[in-house]
Length: 364
Image 1 (cartoon, rainbow, N blue to C red):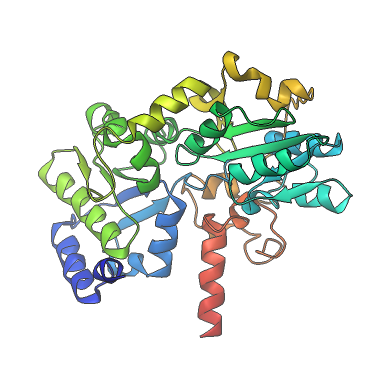
Image 2 (image 1 turned 30 degrees about the horizontal axis):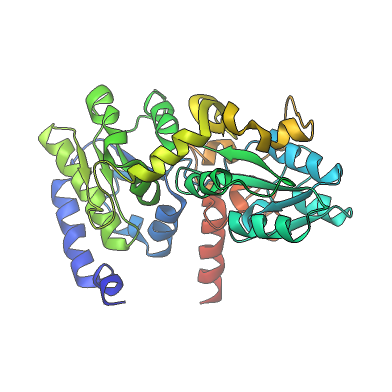
């Protein structure tokens, strides 16, 4: 608790903010992109943007693992449920819209969809009911992929299969760096993912794209220090890779987790909601573990999905091209109670975070 409070010290935050103002350019706009839903929550909840110079923008990238799951993969999970398979998933996934329905809609129609808190919960459920077919909808970035790999390596019950929807962060950052109309000047890389893949995974951004890149933690001072470090690099004209989150992130990362993922998964091109297909950005079960693939076991296949509903601007929010308040549906047709877009569903979704803070301000 003492450590947490230390990284929320308001006096120190003001001093860092002053340093940010000192080092920020006096002309032109600096656009820094973070790629983590927890970073967006910290930035919005603690009013970080209000401490920055007017010409320093911090935008939210595709850092919400639930938000970027394409509708086609939600459709696959729904198809599994309609086939009589018990689908297990995390709570955030339940209401993510598919092309025609969500898993919650499928549950309302009488299918067996169950919320679990970990993949090991799904394993235990399948073991308790050996005569019923189960599937675990494995969603998340490199942070949660090792947990899925552990259970698959452990040879789970034969009545459990996996619908793997894990994505890989650096390829998405590469896509953002190459978007000319986004005009990014730096990245704040995600802390949780970086504990697994290590600092080394981001070398390409300063080396190839000349883009300052800082791995940062999740407390207000972590984010402020990350912003300061990027601005300092820009002022020096020396883009490089730095680690603000040294208390959790190393150069190599968690090598055991990396080795485990390499044993279980293959890397393929993957579709991201709002971003399209990104090269080498998705994990799938490799040939050795294909027996656990729900697609193959239950003949599940969806060719195309409808990612964006009419009027929804999630695809622009996900890459930081617009703010949630610039979407015509925000807190009108699209609310946390009745989400139209995926960004309004998860607690890590940018629209959901902004909606929560808007509600808190109204109540105060």
